[in-house]
Image (cartoon, rainbow, N blue to C red):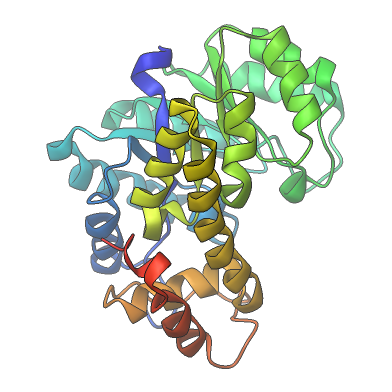
Amino acid sequence: MKRELAGMYAALMTGLSDAGEFDPQRQRNINDYVLRQGLAGLYVGGSSGESGLLTVDELLAQQELVAENAKPSGTTLIAHVGMPNLRDSVRLARQAEKLGYHALSALPPHSYPFSDEEVFGYYQALAGATGLPLIVYEIPLRTGRPLPLALLVRLLDLANVVGIKYTSTDLFKYSLLRKRQPRKLFYYGFDEIYAAAGMLGTEGGIGTTYNLLGRLYVAVDQAVRAGDLVRTRALQMVSQDFVEALMETGVLPGMKAAFRVIGVDCGPTRAPMTPAVADAEGRMREVLARPAIREWLA
């Protein structure tokens, strides 16, 4: 399972119409670009895809369209199905299984301060809802609190749970979790410091900026695995320069602006998400013109 699911995955973005509706053609535009990046696969329906702002029906439609586009390339597909309630999560998971997705992943239940036992019960039910392997998720930025180490160990012990997407800067806890669960898959989720986790051991990464610069992150991962610290540092600094610019525009509005700059028609972000600056495209045009970043565009 480690070999089959390991690698670098774009946390796929979502194409929307000018009115903010799910737009199949704009989704295809994004898919076509990302599928040329040489990544191991796509992580579909996650935070980078604005899933917290989409309806379940829109997420189901996106799942189906991505499966159709990706099938000829043999790309590995992970469906993110983490909704605030278990019923919607199971609905998404069961369709993903029917469509031939290779694995599932899910945020912990959110929107309310769920207890550790409620979080455990959610993952236990989701792990048993299909025959697909499940990747749990640690992301305090979205849930409002870090999950305790002991709970993460228990979650990774669940039948059908094969690994974790870990999006936290607490790399000491990450190391302890790897030590306690050495047979599980570990994906790291902060693009700009992927190399730091890579040095501690990962099976891959899942990130937003991989949509645009996937080849760069494949190269970062290869440099880490080769033990080439000088190249790793240099490549990670390219990533950091891009992410620093995104922090000024807003991450997803900036990413969509960057796509428009390179001619990929992907639409806006969904309200109430808006760019943090008046001229996001101008800012992204300036950043993408830097030779160190431009060379990684597909």
